[in-house]
Image (cartoon, rainbow, N blue to C red; front, top):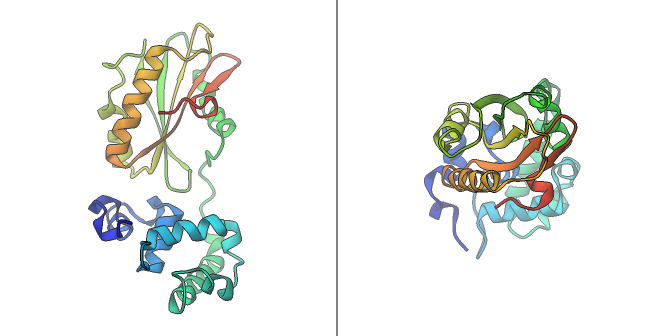
Length: 224
């Protein structure tokens, strides 16, 4: 099993926090920083993912030190460090900025696309999210028929880099009200997903809307 130090520098939690800010790390990456070191065959990031699988974030807030201590790799001071961090989080919870929309479902995302449903041309938008899945930016990338020329990875991901987005959701409208996914939609989405992998910016979904309907690549199981 690879150690954290074996990961590319931009994927190591500590370096990623320094470069992009704590708000742009996943829950597992933040927990891995607290864990610091792994155990035989498991990196700190592996242990963090296993811990969150057993105790999702809402459950983690009420987990006891003994429960943490019983997880392999969290013995001794590691469980104490996590407990201290969780208590600080509880005390500071009132400072959480909930003014930004949270796009944690397809319906929440579709609600952000109402302005393009009735457009007479195809509008391609990208929704940029932080690690909490809060919408931090929305950009119109192209207007017109979708082609590789109009929707280029550079135009999609440059704003993501500048606003330190952790993930993106792609979206466009079909003015003819045809809700089917076209071959062009598939090819363009696959290209953008591959580009996102290189940049460590996940493409969470691609949603097509019409005047009174929508289709989600994620719900249809056609994300690449």
